[in-house]
Image 1 (tube, protein in one colour):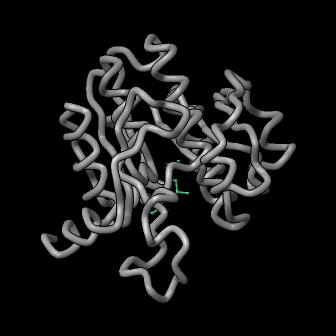
Image 2 (tube, protein in one colour):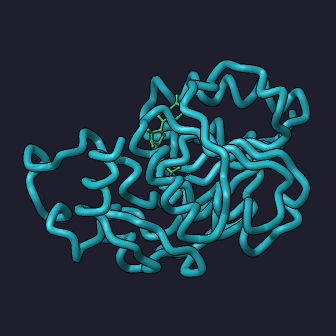
Length: 216
Ligand SMILES: C[S@@+](CC[C@H](N)C(=O)[O-])C[C@H]1O[C@@H](n2cnc3c(N)ncnc32)[C@H](O)[C@@H]1O
């Protein structure tokens, strides 16, 4: 883990150039050599955690502006990436927060980002998709509808959880996996323009949104 930590420190930098400037996040930014380097020269395979995805930005922004949505709740941030959703929930007085990702680098950078923002967040590397999530009443999903097949599995699972009274918050900029039919089963809570740097990273997306999955 120490070797991965050194690589993260070498190739990322703390930044506040995003929709939640209250939070320092260690990311690959345009000032980092890896930003423009060919994928083969990266020491990381698929470093999703090194970018703050528009869906995650909407999730964290909404939480920071509407603390009542997480206050005293038990939060699971599934696919936490850099950990921003979990960090925002922790800052806004959630009762218990677990940042979850199946990528060990995401878990490590979430711990680093959590510390940088003076939070102490629990992490969990297990795959929760399909599980009952008994220990949680709120599930955060930041930008996970990027693949049609995975979106189907994810949405079916979230649908089961919402029927069991879990609050499901989905941050998404309009990925193809969040189809019109699925959007009709959700309530739009907020829409945000993306900062310029995020637009550069996400060619095509200029705004992002937070949705709540409806119970019926
Ligand atoms: C597109 S990134 C979004 C990261 C973060 N939520 C954000 O919005 O910035 C998707 C993340 O989901 C993670 N992931 C993929 N499948 C997962 C699973 N079954 N359980 C937990 N995390 C998963 C990936 O490792 C990646 O970090």
